[in-house]
Structures are given as structure tokens and as C-alpha cells.
Length: 379
Image (tube, rainbow, N blue to C red; front, top):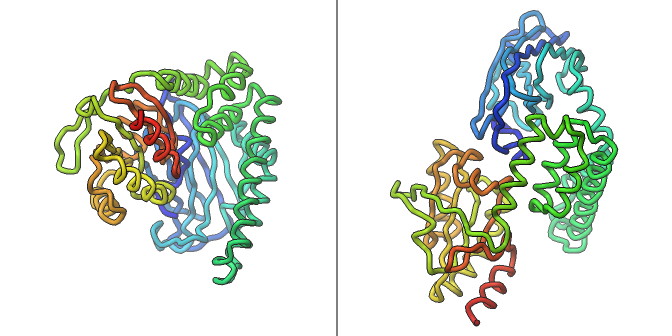
């Protein structure tokens, strides 16, 4: 894992708030020459990477934040460069917040102790609260990693792991719901709400009561306002609502509008070349297109590929056989203008739009798209 390591769930639009200064001071007892620390964070879809040389085991970062902000701290002990750290890199997730944050340890930053920061203290409490999920996932990953090739091809074995995976996810959801109920003023109740929003496709029937149960102060905070805006966006994109129009460049940099396809059934499909689940879903979309394209159906595909990654985007189109779709992107990653307009918090995400421009279905997976189109075009 290199740069861009933060979760999609954190990519909601930023809320205007006063900037506040932070200082992150780190200390390790190791004194290896050439060691460097890196601070990796993503703001509005753009990755920022700062570095600092360790001097007698000490390093320091300074900056500003509008609210507690998740970042990844990585220590390169040998001075080999961040790109050469491999999967066993020494790293630590922490929150940047106003004031001075201290982190100190012996050999590894991953085992270091954070002090001087209430939000990071609360983060440790939240992680402990949902630790049953992490324990379950560690066991699943360990068992999969140790599995033989025969076991990985064994349907019974893989189905068992898959069932345990879904059980772990349900455990996490239950713990997050409980945390929100029991901690209505905690910043991490908003963090939990964001994750639940991704996992349940922004189900407002579940999320709204949980949000309403938060304290007034938390709802007024930048994080609270941000989540409220995401719910308002979702309300405007409900079944029966008009799909917001937009313009974005295609693979030849020519402008394409959603309204260009009025009079047709349109699958507005958000994906990216780097998204494994998207690539796994592509064959289903291709199959539906081949079956219904001559019955007034088009696929308008919006890629959340990263700046400078047009070749990866085009390569995925070619490899997955998506050449007959209409493809657009501004190559701004999670800051893609259409994704922000539609409140996209994770990919794949899709909207099925009727010939009159109304949204008639969301997040159709597997054979659901085929079945829904079959119902519509046979009327």
C-alpha cells in the first residue's frame, strides 16, 4: 500500500469552517540514519504527502485542519522511499486535530503511544468498542492466507469464509449502531454513521433516526453538517426524482451531457479501474447492455480514476469489454464533479434513469439490472 491509503467513506464534501493549527511531534528510540516519516492524507479527493527526516529519533509536522482529519503516518526506517516499503510498512492511522499531538515509541510507530489529543484518545476507545469485528477479520484473513490452492478452489471452504465475512460485517454494523446510541456526542458516532451509510447504500430510513439522536453540538459541528448535507443530497436523488443533469468530457475530451440521452433508459454507472468490485460487476453490465441496447438502453459510465491515470482508465475499458458504453471522467478521483453531485460515497454505484429523466432504480447488482430492464421494456 502506497499513497492514497484512506477510506472512501471519508471522501464526503468538505464543509466551510475555520482552519485550526496542529503540530504532530513524534519520537522513536531507534536511531537509524536516513530514516524518514511520511504523513499521508486526502482532502477533497486530492492526496497530500508530507515528509520529515528523523533527527535523533524525532520528527515534526505542522499544518491546519477544519475538523479532526484522518491521516496515515508511515516511518521509512531505512530511507528506501515510501514506494519501496511493501506490505509490512511501519504505519499508524491517527487523527490530526487542533493543538499538539505527541506520538512516542520504541522501534515501531505502529506500536507507539499517542498523547495530548482527546480525539485520538476517543479513537482508541471507538476501536476497542468495535474490536470484535477486527478480531474476526484477522482470523478470516489469516485462514485465507494459509489456505492451499486446493482449499481456495473448494466451494465449501470458500463459502464458509464468505459466510464468516458477512457475519463479521453484520457484527460491525451492530456495534456501530450501539456506539451511536450510547455516545450521541462523540465525533466517532459521525464516523460510524459514514461507514454505515456506505454499507447500507445510504438507507435514510435507518440513518435519519440515528442522526437525529445525536447531540445538537455534534450535529452543528463540521462533521455533523457534512453528514446532514449528504442525507439531503440523497433525499434529492430518491426514486421518482429527476436525475440532475451534468456535463463531463469523454475519452476524447468531448463534452457529454446526461440530457443528451433523454428518451432512453440510461444506466448511470460510477466505477473506476482501481475498484475490484466494479471490475467484478462489469460482466453483468455488459451482458445487460448486449441484451437491451437495441431496445432504447445505454450505459453512461462515470470513472473515478485518478489524475494522470487516463491510461489505466482506457486500459480497463478495453480489458473489460466496455467499448460500447459512453465513458466520461474528469480524472479527479473522489473529487469527480458528477460523483460529488450524486453524493457517491463508494463504488460501484449506479442509477437507472427512465426516458423522461426520472430515477427509477439504484444500485442494481448481478442479474437485478437484467430483470428490471426486462420488466420495463416488456411493458
